[in-house]
Image (cartoon, rainbow, N blue to C red; front, side):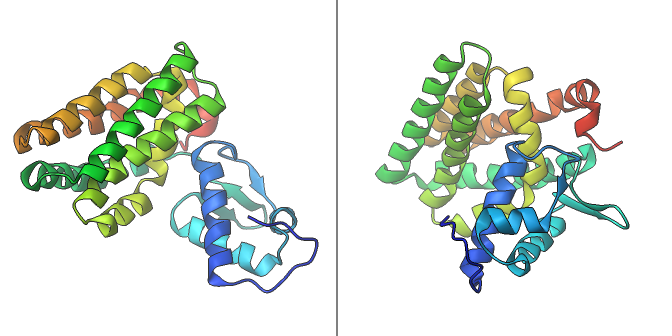
Length: 236
């Protein structure tokens, strides 16, 4: 996003871009749970007035990623295990429907290529990590993970359904990212992705549904343990 010393009038696209960048910082834990946010600092960062920054923050409040505490300020919200479970419920239901449909109707060549490429990028990140993912490696792995899941929805013409998943999964994503370096081995996730892809490619809806269900359940296996080891990041 361009940075300027002036503070020009903001467009809806500006607000969307600010929202997306701050959201990404929160999901990838560049902005830590409990961190205080300053509208002035963010406005300076984006080279824009406080008004569009405030509009972006309001969207993040609605998504449960930011808390406003009276007389104290604005803070990145701590991770809520309840919100993670709700997000996982929504995502699991939608993604099961997506991959089952993909197995039933088949996937176009472009979607298959995108899925295979995402898996290859995850394997490259896993090799680089040598079992311990640093921030940059974990971010690359997570980006490939999102591309993998999105490709199924887009491949069967359900990009709008994936947009619903995106809105719902922000709390889920923070757990997912935190678990990469500390709980869930990357090769396990890659193997699960390969199983999903193989079932869809084989045109086996039941197997595809079982594979994506197993994959969606992975994050809840580690959530409580992460909350115990990182009490500063989680809501009571």
